[in-house]
Image (cartoon, rainbow, N blue to C red; front, side, top):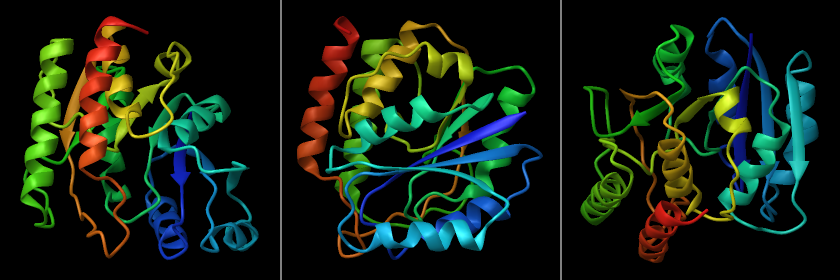
Length: 233
């Protein structure tokens, strides 16, 4: 069985090798396809890819360099197109999400209970870095609003960690280029009536000084996207 790990990358020269080291140190009992979609990095990240391939010569890497920055959604759509695994997992290129949570994320799918698994930052007892109050409120509000539109009871719609059986990814027709990919994925998964599970994950959020990219404008566009993808494709 093959696990495809899709990693959108944009200006992560400081963290990319470290997150790959964590990803590859976790034994999940599956072969891995690592898909790196570089979304127009300009900070030296692109010079790392030959080094990465030389450092892990036995690992399969599929690397795509987008000509210009298009956004996380565009990078994920390209990564999904390249994914050949029986299971597809999204991993950010920073260090906010810990690959040590992979076994828990994969378990419901491997046991045949789930088609999709969301990793929630708001349930469970794992460690969470304490940061911005208004980010927390924004995330909870967007999840509530998404749940109202989709009739799901998720606790963390905006989470990076989403895991899918390959049939789910193959059946998704995605349009979003930027961070609205999260509500679009959620709405279209709900519409497909797939079996969805949530598991608690750890979270080590970044400050803006450390490279955090999402802001309040993204929350506004996410609200619009929630409504859009509830009623339109």
